[in-house]
Amino acid sequence: MRVLVTGHLGYIGTVLVPMLLAEGHAVVGMDSDLYAASNFGPAPVAVPTITKDVRDAVRDDLEGFDAVLHHAALLNNPLGNLDAQLTYEINHLASATLARLAKQAGVPRFLFSSSCSTYGAAGDEPIDETASFNPVTPYGHSKVLAERDIALLTDDNFTPTFLRNATAYGVSPRLRFDLVLNNLVAWAYTTGRIYLKSDGTPCRPIVHIEDISRAFVALMQAPRELVYNEAFNVG
Image 1 (tube, helix red, strand yellow):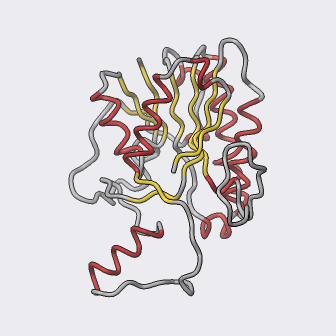
Image 2 (cartoon, rainbow, N blue to C red):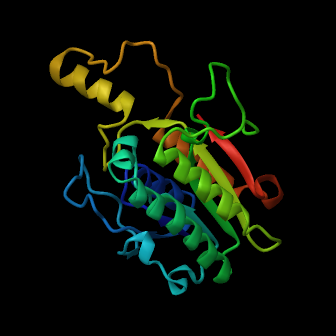
């Protein structure tokens, strides 16, 4: 398959791209490369790249692809709280526009990197994909709105699939230290002590970035009827 990966130079994208190449897919990336100076170890695997902000995408960028794997986003709650409008502009509006452009360009599959933050304050019991949304941050709410608008585009020729990822962790060429488990490991490694920024009682689902990447590859390759306008908790 010929695949467009947005955010391919980000934390998850730099792990996902080599997996797609190993499966024999032809990969093109779209990324503003905001973190070009932030490599952790080897540089990301090079693929043909459309260097632009996802907000600037046009229909021609989407022509000729069999699938779009959309990862580009403004991440984490502090950024969302700092500028909620920018979070909605990128995570919601740009995502919905990208899906519409993909549909217009004849791309049959669109996989959206959503989040378990869509469930927000959901109580202590495990929940599945039928649970109600209850986001408590601009980031989580932006993902809810994006899912809503992308789902409206579903038809016989356009199959969106939503991956509601748990909190990611793991090593990447573009490593993030703001994520909870990565942050705990970084403190432990550099100081010999684990630094908790809470009283230790909160819990949250986590998932390794390689498992998120494997989920994207599996769902992209799955029979269409199994993933047609479906959401999957990845954690």
